[in-house]
Length: 239
Image (cartoon, rainbow, N blue to C red; front, side, top):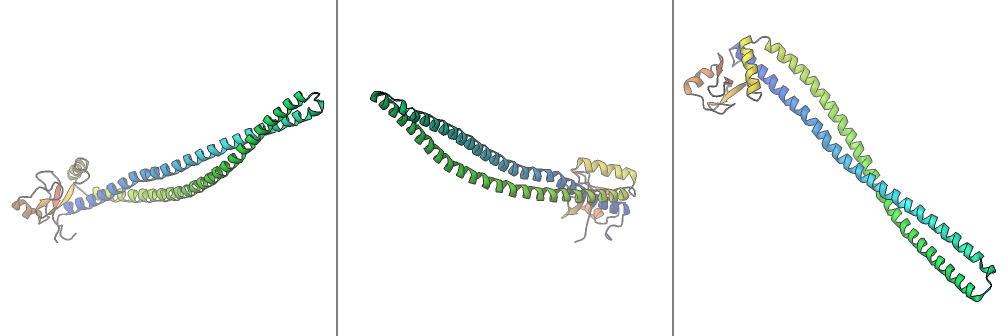
């Protein structure tokens, strides 16, 4: 920065550059958990969908077992009814027994039809569950990959932050304590921007026009001059 003859001003510009980089890194670090959380939402949604598919399939399986048990009971009932035929003495009893057997046979037929329909439903539910499992596996893989990348990025940003803090400390140790205290105050009260360029005769911090006489002095970059409006330290850079 040959255009800055004032050493303290040059140091202020340098420490502002470090602070701007630090602020940028901190903001990036803050955004990483949100990115991970959005990916987690997708995974949670798909896992919830899979859980629902598993529940539907399990309920269908329970219903099938219930129907199969009912079918067995009905078959046992029919077998017992038919076993009574040799014991029949009258035609009236015989006709009554045949009617009872017919009713039981119809019950058996109805149950078998329900089982066939349910087996088709279970095939569909199984296919849906398999598809959901694939989606969850893909989303889980994507989530873990992105999580690893984010954790790596966070670590790299932390290392860069440590290095920048060290460089900032070294620069700050060379700045006049009173000037450094004012810089620190401005950083805290001016949204992280304490040292700014003057462009087109305007403060690049608050955009207020600089009076011509003061602008002439700022162009020399040979002393500390602050904006009359926002108090930020001003400097000029040749095009």
